[in-house]
Length: 231
Length: 155
Image (cartoon, rainbow over all chains, first blue to last red):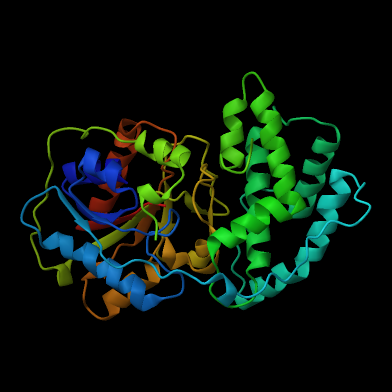
């Protein structure tokens, strides 16, 4: 964000915008930036709240009134926390069956089968909107292949681009299913469910462990799983 | 609410490692007209694009156009980082790409107009100087579209 701001302004185009990491912006000194305290991934603060988003935008546009810069202003309104007990309940139970001896492929496809009605519902309620589709293959095909890779204890070292897209598509599929019911969600709670209760979260963590053991591809572990969920 | 001091040490260190000195001498473009007369484009570094556009690579300084004629609800995200929340964006495209909010500002005549084309980059994994060439390309496209100002959103 800082680099684009600098280069565009140098070409004669005014820029203003959002800073999510104040320290980065302070060091790079783009012409105009509004620092917000919102979580990474939420530059406008709160989904579905037009009034809140307008207040943020107004504050950032107001920086265009400054006579000289660089201008770095702190936005003083925090995004409201979502009480966990106020969020809609998780629609699916991910409790492990007593005899959990299935293959990764079977476990992932069974989980997908359980989640699909909720994903369908969420998509209908969002007027057809979905973030799934970065991969050129279906979620079913991707999970089947991911499961087979784990069953063979193999990394897709010649298909890393497919692999990253497959993992991302699977994760947004799960998020969209888990948040199918209308309401405010605590994103930390959804992350917790995905990474620590679902087979897909476990599978992704297993892939991250395998990458960490690879002599040349250890860095790839960080591209599929945050540091706090993999060893 | 999230501040660096609220984050785990590994994440705080990762973000602080991205601190860079200014890219050059200070730059500043003066506003020649009222905000209510400005033509504004949105640019995000969230790695957004339509499904029929190529995904972003793991480290990628190229950009994707987001035509104002297309439905922003069809945007997908191929950002290489896993260190940010996606649940909010699955609920509301405006959380990252506030196109509906700017259309409302345009309708209320609080801004002059919206650009014909907006742009998306993927902000991760590269030195900031790597974006110089593509930013210059976008600046040329914005000038052709008579854009006065850009509203930038990270992710």
